[in-house]
Image 1 (cartoon, helix red, strand yellow):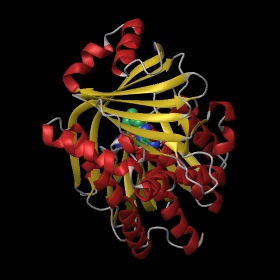
Image 2: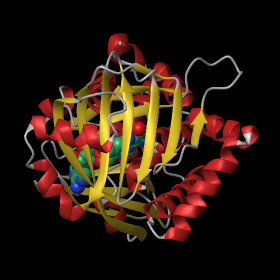
Image 3: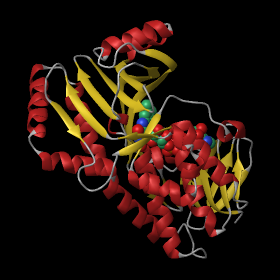
Length: 388
Ligand SMILES: Cc1cc2nc3c(=O)[nH]c(=O)nc-3n(C[C@H](O)[C@H](O)[C@H](O)COP(=O)(O)OP(=O)(O)OC[C@H]3O[C@@H](n4cnc5c(N)ncnc54)[C@H](O)[C@@H]3O)c2cc1C
């Protein structure tokens, strides 16, 4: 066997898995279709990831957190949900447990760069870049991965971390729920005069949604959710016009917005794999669970899956067969339990808030009013945000 583990996909979750397992000293290959330079110094992609306390602890453990400049981490102290013009806001804060913040917002490209730097320090990890995976086959003895350049790799375990439209998942014959939502997220970093007080806002309005994520200083990441047929109009706006559009959609709450970066557009699709494990293979990250970004859990759950798989492998011992079926079945069961409820709850929330019929608007209003009066429920959601 050439390798003990082949990871397909050098995105943040694939790299996190390599970083977590590399200290065990076994041979790991990461296959990524992007070039090495794009991994070593990724371009800004507009995404700010709200990292939970648990994710930060994981990144600290693998040595990635300290590689992210503290000045570029933005603490998220509170979150609030608004519904149309309703005066009721549902607020979440860290509560009285001693935590100062719900999470920290960090640009996705900085997380990826930090994880790449960690992986690059491990001589037992081989990075094969600029090459896509074309096919995979597994049997009880081994996993075989065929690359687009004709090279064939073999290992005891294959892990697919190759996005929500995973080629590995498909080649393994694992089905998935795939729901394209007909909407897209348009992201732009903005500057403004108003103080956001480190509070994230999710504002569901008639026909569209806007989220404002607080960055350091008087800066925010604006996230517009719009129908797909509106994307080309918004993308074609000049920075001044886009700033005015965001100001208007946000009801001028933070004053006039100046666009500093973006827009970046992400079509919305949610996915959930029918299985997270197969013979000598497992799925992690978006290849396993492609969350709707509204609850900011995709990467956090991806790291949780990585921690679960790496924990089981660590427990089995460096010398064990990493692809043994009992270990993979345990991973599947644990990760399904960790992800299914939050995936289902997020999709229900999205369905409720995407529906502009009068009954749905009334239910939203009632939910916010009830939520505002139920501190226990609010605290449970805040705990969930802090430690999914
Ligand atoms: C707008 C937006 C905001 C978000 N905000 C948050 C947030 O606040 N909190 C949070 O936790 N999550 C958030 N997420 C989700 C998070 O970004 C994803 O969950 C995360 O990027 C998934 O990482 P991944 O490595 O699994 O997949 P990806 O990032 O998709 O990486 C997959 C990698 O595999 C490579 N690849 C694909 N196919 C092949 C192939 N055939 N051969 C070789 N390589 C291949 C790709 O090039 C890529 O590098 C957000 C997502 C979006 C879109």
